[in-house]
Amino acid sequence: MHVPLDSISRTRYKPSRIANGVERYRARAGLGVTLRSCWRPGLASLIWLCWAVIGAAQEALEPADKSPSADAMHALVSAAVMPTDRTTEAAKGPILDTGLEAEGPDVAKWLRPQLGLVAEWEPEADGVEILNFDADVTIPTYPVWGPPPPMISFGFSYTDLMAPADLDLPPALYDFTLGASWMRRIHDQWMLRVMLGAAFASDLNNTSSDAWQLRGGLFAVYDWRPEVQVLFGAVATGRQDLPVLPGLGVLWRPTPAWHVNLMMPRPRISYLLLDRGERQHWVYVAAGLSGGTWACETQGFDDRFTYREWRAGIGWEWGPPKSLIPLPGQGIKFETELDYVFGRTFEFEYRSDQIDVSNSLLLRTGVWF
Image (cartoon, rainbow, N blue to C red; front, side, top):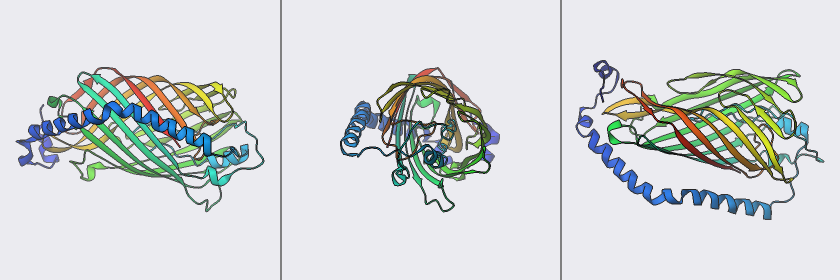
């Protein structure tokens, strides 16, 4: 590895760390291998067990679902939060058609906080293996200006990066996020959606100002037809390589069995495979961009590290009757996805080298309740 001489003036020089940098890295890596050997074999079993226990408890204890009317759901769903974590996913638009009828909405239920847990695993390719764990909480606030209320979200992400020592990649990456969003109708056919968030992304060795990021977005949503919505806007990602992404796309529900989300940068097409009333089974195909930027320490210097990859795959979703936006309070939702991952690249802000990794697979599992 080579560090350009002109980069020394732009970083904080730490001579005491250069001499033993490799030794410290190997020590951390050795400890990481020992810890991983303890908990990784039971990870999948633990996720499935938690899902089964929670699902059984909900079915046994929860009373009959009182779903809100279409108008009430449209008002509540408009406040859904666009993801503001390290992954740049598609903005999911307001509901188009619920197909549900009820005597009245159980507003308290639909305004409950929602917890989400997601685990991802990319098996070894070129000596690089990646594990990622995400947890986030979405909290509706009091609707001071009427429905929909502002939404507050908290998130944490941990990435376990296992790679050969000679690559000098950070072995562990952390991401702490705080965000808020709000949507208001400004015209019969137009809605405005605002998202704003802050993140602290670091390997916890470099905790300088490089770790702080501003994330968010601004969208205009146009109700073209009852089953079609068009979105225009932009997303601030906090990434070093792609700081701003355009948010353009169409949300279309041609039939109750099809949900077509052509929103960049992560489109998805879903099909209703089985409908059991309060629970539905969906299959989908999806693609998009993933990765992120973190402050890190490499070769004794403070730097910024960026990982970029593209995904394309298929998935299965089990949960309550869905809209194009997941609503807090709907009940438990489970999702699993298998992706083909390509275009995998590691980059540093000050180091001159770029590390390309072979294509791989990705297994993603998540539960929301």
